[in-house]
Amino acid sequence: MAEFTRLQNCLALIRLRNPPVNAISTTVARGIKESLQKAITDDTVKAIVICGADGIFCAGADIREFKVHKTFDIQLGDIVDEIQRNKKPVVAAIQKLALGGGLELALGCHYRIAHAEAQVGFPEVTLGILPGARGTQLLPRLVGVPAALDLIISGRHISANEALKLGIIDKIVNSDPIEESIKFAQRISGQSSQELQMTSDMVADKSSALGPPKGYTSKATIEFFFYLTVPGLCCGM
Ligand SMILES: C/C=C(\C)C(=O)SCCNC(=O)CCNC(=O)[C@H](O)C(C)(C)COP(=O)(O)OP(=O)(O)OC[C@H]1O[C@@H](n2cnc3c(N)ncnc32)[C@H](O)[C@@H]1OP(=O)(O)O
Image (cartoon, rainbow, N blue to C red; front, side, top):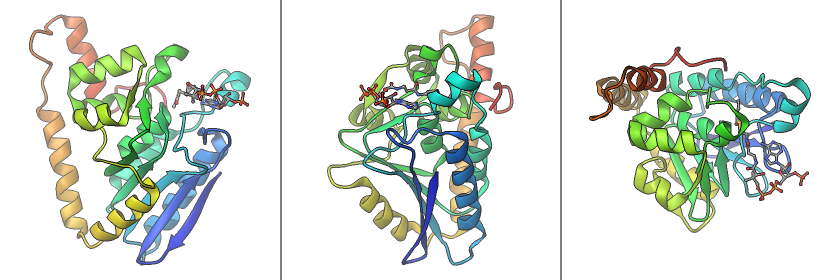
């Protein structure tokens, strides 16, 4: 499930809870969607923090459901779109792990604050799939196409430090990232929706200005580049 808490100071906290790794099951996805709706439609909420329970953000889609249904049906892409469409700033507080769909959820947020020991990555390739919930568009916007390809194709987990250097994470802390995210969300909750919209537009402009990386000129690479960067060309979630 996902727990919705209305905090003081005009903030809402959405906490993923699905032991042992807060994987995104259909129930968790529904909980996130409902919590987001509550936070977005409540005019007294000015900023939103998303975190995980029990010291871990999220290890991605719930592979227990995958084993039963042979497919993931969590509509995570819709959730990421909703976060991005919404005008209130959303901060992801990353403790320990943000993998697969967990990283896509965090990439959909406007800011990411991680604990120094956290790790992030896209392990989808180890399941024979590609990130399908906007990760293939959002990651290259932040880190560029070659680094995004490397992470998506290798499936490797990287440290918070490497993620910070690449630009995936905005800030690393040695203290509790949830507390830090709440403080940060409080600070930015004064930002007008117009300012936030301008920031989102700038990120979108930057991504559409990206061309295929120099030296990568084969037709297959260019097609893959567009697959990576153009929303809607991506399969299924
Ligand atoms: C579409 C697809 C989308 C959106 C995706 O997100 S695909 C990606 C799905 N996620 C993964 O493939 C991650 C797989 N898990 C791991 O790599 C590791 O388990 C871990 C790094 C998350 C933790 O490793 P470790 O500390 O060594 O511990 P264990 O491997 O022993 O795992 C601990 C328990 O957690 C359960 N687990 C792990 N990942 C998931 C998951 N995604 N969904 C459900 N449960 C998960 C794992 O089975 C262990 O459970 P128990 O055996 O202790 O009951």
